[in-house]
Image (cartoon, rainbow, N blue to C red):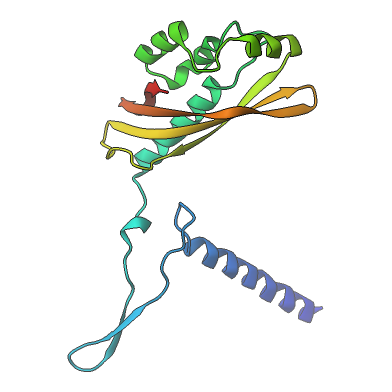
Length: 194
């Protein structure tokens, strides 16, 4: 019985160690942190090891992560449509209002549009009682530098039409450029450009 406990404890420690090592050897973007060390010697001949630093492994400030999450959540709500009950996608912007600045909410609720807005397809989805579900990824390739009060990102919106038990990918994906601003202690979407 004690041998079993010992084997179980060793296995648990090994699994935990593997998980911790995997976690610590990755950045938040999933890229491996360089693990090679560069040996060097001091003037006395003693060997030292220098671990290289990689600028790309430095994490973005926590505020940027919060802003990105606000963008992802707000855009997910804004691009999730219910054509059988929504008159247009403007209704979805109304549901996303808590993620938007007042200025943007007022503009988008009145004047929301995309290339595939209310159309023949919208009417068909309405008849089918389809739900158009959005999956949003937020990236920062080539974005301007973040400030304490403003963050700009690029978002890709992938939508799926669900009718009953069948699903269909809505083509093409939608790309939007998003500006977020800090208002007090909250980040809000201030601009969405197609």
